[in-house]
Length: 83
Image (cartoon, rainbow, N blue to C red):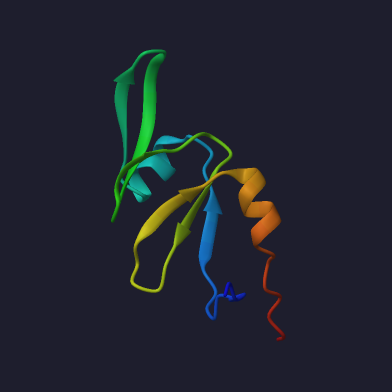
């Protein structure tokens, strides 16, 4: 029987703007592909292409992975902290 599950933790995320600063911060590399240079992010699962506007998520162990903007917006909402 299929059951429903909810994630128990939050993530930190930042929208990738394609800048050198962000590329250096997240160790984004550029690979020559069929349509020119393509940025990719090294993840636990291997190299993943990241497009400008996608989100770079940071997990509880400090690992990073890209999430397409439309998927991110449907899946996550910003946590508002009380001050």
